[in-house]
Image 1 (cartoon, rainbow, N blue to C red):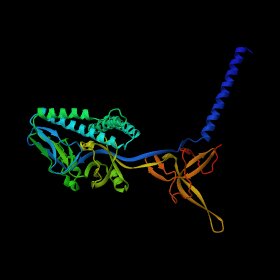
Image 2: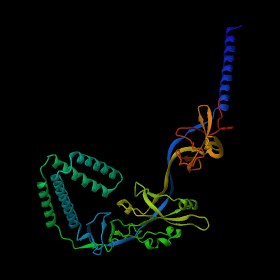
Image 3: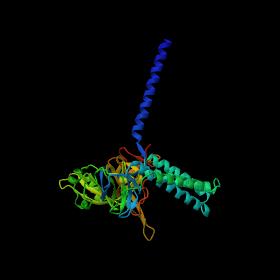
Image 4: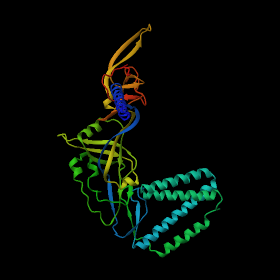
Length: 427
């Protein structure tokens, strides 16, 4: 036989043999292998995403002199009734000179405080170093979040701590020369500028902010109990008066009105845990909220929901309309695909007074877990469910499980397969 022909026959035979072997392996795998997923620990926050409208008890303050203002209080500062919130000046130069002199007086006060603190010796260098690091980190974080008021406070705190450290370590003995220089600057500013010609006062106590957005009178705060979805849709912005000096938010409690679906309203009504609300623009952290009102549509349409809040900061003072996330609790547990859930029997063994065993069986909801080559059925305790997966409690309270056994972290849960039963051995 021709050698070339023999080689071709041999190669063809070996190729056929290899294909047969591979086909056998694939068929064996298809018959004996079941796809699995590891049970992994997952935290899920149940939430509703919608658009919110903030309703506050707001009073716009008017600069009747219609002149230049220099504010006496900071944004977000709590003020009492009849408190001066700004001085009125004839021109910008006088107002700027007053503001600068006021800032220099605060610097003198900070230097005095630093000197007094260093004399007591109550603070160590290590404590000051930690305070400087913390203030600097907070300073950078507030810059990143565009929180101008907080940045100014952080800068003042950082400078005061650095000054105190200089005194404590002997870098300088006192701030007398610096204070004298600042006093000279203040005297120059006061003598070269005009005095204020009046002031703006608040008729009510509350929280002050310079910012007005035109929605202050869009809805009557006292009528939140009567608010409808139509009212929410009809909110209108008005022009802010040119002589507006800011506003006072008088009531600690404020509201967030929003539109959600009927099913979401049902979820809120049946949820008995703590609620939170996260504002996409006004805050970086969720704040506590209370379900105040739910007005459902009789025809099954969308519903009006009103949340009540009492936490406030300078960023929230300027918030009005923005996307929000209503948090309805977090759930931590083992994530399991819904495809893996089956109903099967589990067995419980109990013993009587004579130590005689009694076996009971009950049909429960659970999953099949692969331990080596053996299939075991484990009951599950579902704490949260979506259309695709469930969150299971790895350590349910006593009495939740029929026989006390459930899945554990990293168990290989079988998500697909036929003829599964407890105790089956996969060869």
